[in-house]
Length: 231
Image (cartoon, rainbow, N blue to C red; front, top):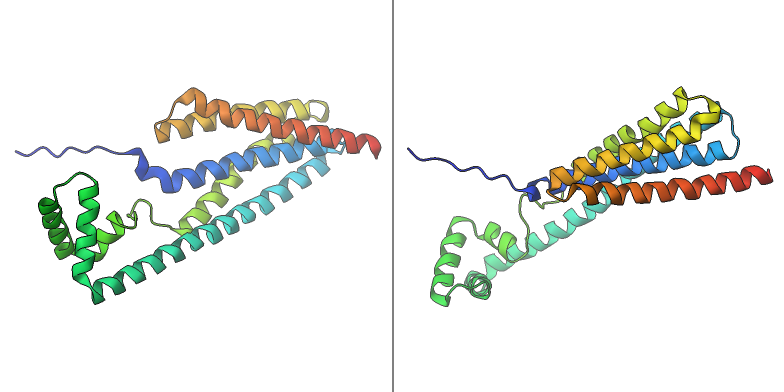
């Protein structure tokens, strides 16, 4: 009886993992920084919450639009390359077969074997073979604009909700400390989860997001305190 070996690879998660981590991280950092900055300017708790909610909505839409436009541009480039490759296969299939064989020779195959591999792969699906081995395109890396936009917007909103909940539930004098501390804890946890999902070292994943989050909140708090004092 044959045993099927299933070996999941971390690269299969690249598409959604990048957008999810970026969205959640940006949601926590930007909203927490906004809340801390406005609170440092001696604004009322209601004003802090209004600013935070506006930041959540604007940030989620910005993330969605940015991801959609960016990934759509990537998708357009992929489609253009595939269209050109399809035309080349129609006009000069032999040259394309030889081009594919040279790629395999460069990877270490003997020329005779490389030509056999190229011939068999092109007989099965010529465009897919060239997309994968010449252009570097695969199902894993294919651009998906809508998926990236929705993932970024949803994870941004989820991340932004945490500092808003803290700002709503903590009294004014303790608001800055609570939002800052809680956000840093959430950032560290996000870094650990992202590192675990991506197969990276947990400590490094937690440290890098926490460092940049702390820096962002410290700078916005300083700006808020400076302008709040002047006003």
